[in-house]
Image (tube, rainbow, N blue to C red; front, side, top):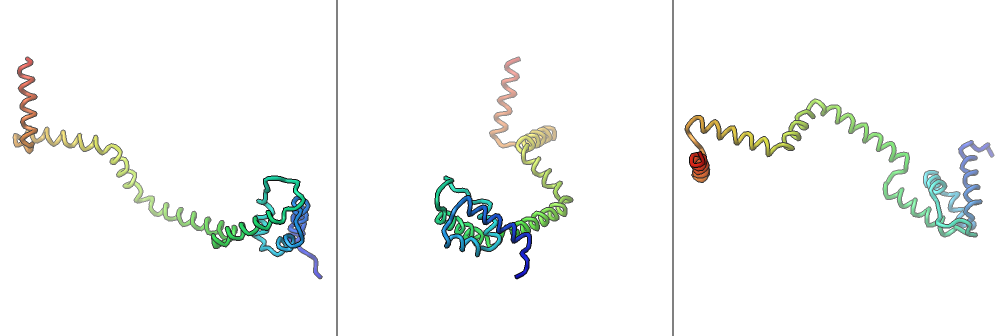
Length: 159
C-alpha cells in the first residue's frame, strides 16, 4: 500500500483521540470510520456529552452522527458549499448595493421626509391658509370660518 497523506494521518490521530476520550463499541467505531469527511469533522469537533467519564458513548455518538447527517442533508449543502454560497450572496449584495448607490439618495430623502411628515404637512397647511387669507378668497369650510371669526371676536372683546 502507498503512504497515507498527512491529512489522513491527522484524521486518524483525531479519531484515536476521540475514541480514547469517548469509548465506543466496534459498531459505532466502524460507523465513525465510514463517515463522509465533512460529517466526521463536525462530529469530532462538536460532540460534547453532558457527562464525561462514562464507559461507553456508543449510543450518544451514533445519535449525534445521525443528527449531524440530517442537518447537513436538510441544508442540502456541506459546510464548505454553504460558505461558498454565503460568500457569493454577500458579493452579489455588495454589487447590487454599489449599483444602487446612485439612486439611494432619494430613499434617504424620502425616509427623512416621512419622519417629520406631520410637521411638514402642518407647515404647508398654515402657509396655504395664510396665502388664502391674503388673497381674500378663502377655501375654508364654514366651521373653520366660524371658529376664526369667534377667535377674532374674543380678541376684540378682550381689548
